[in-house]
Length: 256
Length: 185
Image 1 (cartoon, each protein chain N blue to C red):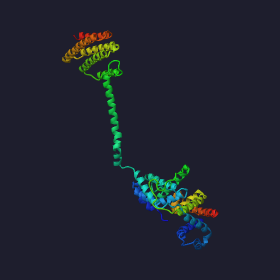
Image 2 (cartoon, chains in turn yellow, orange):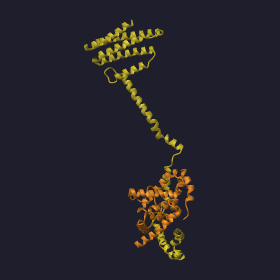
Image 3 (cartoon, rainbow over the protein chains, first blue to last red):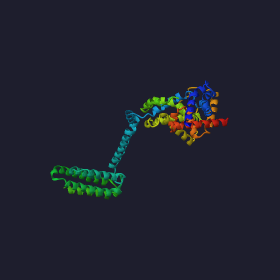
Image 4 (spheres, chains in turn blue, brown):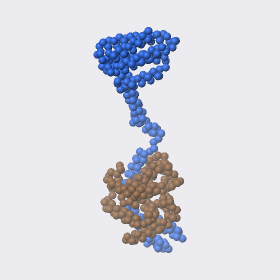
């Protein structure tokens, strides 16, 4: 029964509210039509009327809905989930290309440049310089990666020339303290070259002979050059230079 | 009060496929009701406008996951609105007053007379004061039914109750409101 009244009152309110608000009906005229529930209907109808009247104070201001709609549509358009092509395009846009591809390449190139410069500087270094140990490591690495006996021997001979060049540079720069160590290093390298020459297989005798002749000439020139250097250097350098001359001469003797 | 549920179906489908204009139509259909609901609980029109925009943005973001079988769209919007209102109260952030000519990129297209503004503000204060004296569920049912103009079915869906329960609640809420109006003269 209560449920029925509630539904009835709700329907009456819905039916009469528009005509009440425009003055076609009054509360009393509506109540007169529903005299049986008058006591229940009146307060509710009055409350509903009050709500209906004050409703205009919470209406959106004129033009708000249409202008904010435009704004909302623009905003959600910019938030749209990207399609496959858009995603691919965005992935490889010029800016992304720069960051994803060009930047690592540039970094790698710079790194290669730095490493190359370091290797070059190391190759030109002489005993006593910071990168000289790097030079020796690089030489050892190259030797370790050379498996052909002929090439290996050639490399040893090349390094012995390199030791002589370093020795000469030390003398010319007046760095006489390092001369004994450099002479010993030259001696070691000549000995290694000789051992490598002897280890060349029998089937490469022609190459061995050619290398031996070349190495002998090299050592001969070195002895000559070191002797000239000795005559032009101060006495404090003589002992060191003599050690190098001895090493080269021993090598020459061994080759005979 | 015609039911809006059926009209929404096609627009929702298009919006879910990424059509912003269809969502714009949904906005135009439902924003006034959402705005009135929010403004009936807030003392600032700017806050109500900001929250209305926020509700629809959240709805757009949640749209891919939305299924009509679960909750009708209007109920879905009002639930977001109710949560937005709760968050707003919780954060108690007073948004700085903005120049009406420069509100995040849009402008008012109409003009309102100063007398109407004052009158409307007084009425608004009156409604806020009166409704705030009611129980929260009474406030909600009256706001949804008479301010946002939802049908009993729609109100039931928003409040997650049966239509019968909504009628009972509304019956009591109207009586309570009449009493409050009578007391305040």
